[in-house]
Length: 298
Image (cartoon, rainbow, N blue to C red; front, side, top):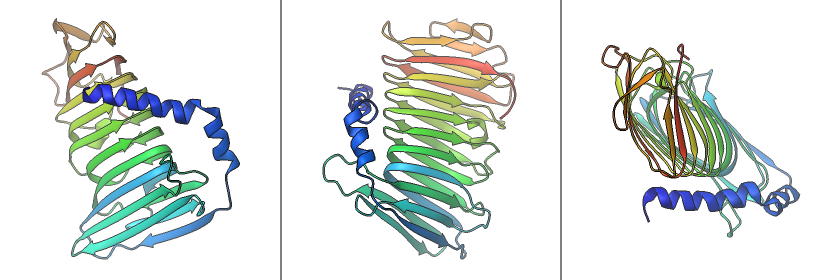
């Protein structure tokens, strides 16, 4: 069984457990207990780079930029009877390493139950590498204003919104996003300032918006299993798309904006004439992919 097929099967099962089963959802609500709060502040003390590893089983995550310049300002509200929380920070000369972890104490299904809310603000003074692994979460990740040089995300049965509303001052060599049974919207990917973008989606609804300010050629590799993906590209970008699909899947582009150069190869009218270029390689399993051109920068 291939990678995409395995992801579709696993995503479908998890989707059924978390989003469809009313017994499971009802028991989570019924078992809520009193919560405790943690407030954590880590000051910037000469670090030149920060590595963040985040592993949150389930809960609510709100991530953004710190107004104080501190490495981290965090507030965590959780149920200590159900959830184990760990925040650990180490300095190695000019490198900071931050570990954020939340796991369920239930030895059955590895999902946090009860209250588990994370409010996180990160420094905008130094480059940050993010490695984010979340399960059944509702997350708002606003990377606007942060200096990001690496982004690797693994999203389980989650509902996630990601924003890049202003250009990232650091170059990201590659963004990796691996998604299971999720709803995902990413806005302003052009502002992320990446060279390569890799997306692997299982079951769910996904929107990838590549508008933003960039002036280079970027490569995008996309695999979709049983999900539905909408890709939004700016009209001022030169775009080339190579697609691979089957009779069980659906792939479409707006014929007003793209010409089919040969079988499964499409180009925008301004491809090869713009400093802003996006090169797509898209593979669709049993799902659907739609590509649309839109005006303006985000």
